[in-house]
Amino acid sequence: MDMTIHASFLPHTDPEATLTFYRDVLGFEVRNNVKYGDMAWITVGPPGQPDTSLVLQPVAAFPGLTDDERRMITEMMAKGTYAALNLATKDVDATFNRLQASDAEVVQEPTDQPYGVRDCSFRDPAGNLIRIQQAS
Image (cartoon, rainbow, N blue to C red; front, side, top):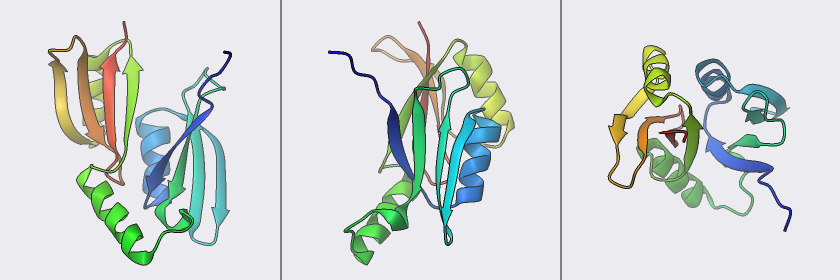
């Protein structure tokens, strides 16, 4: 089978804060920024990897959700229990120091996990958990 991950989706609640975090803090390229009223779908991805994208979409745009469900999702996002993204870097300690200096919300400092990886984690402006692992 010849299949790759083309795009994954994460919800956001504030397009400007989201754009700043993924572009300026994480260093992702902005590939698209589609606005509709006060909503924005922001597509970003790592430089040099044009075939892998992350689409950050507004919670309000999830089709078929009730207002109560949207509120519940927003509350879960704020607690960091709704969505997560795992990234990898060659130097997790240097990446941690750079992100911490940007005032990103630290969840976990670099740690050697019992399952064999060294990682750290942050929350994006919407509360999504961003776990960064040391690349092998």
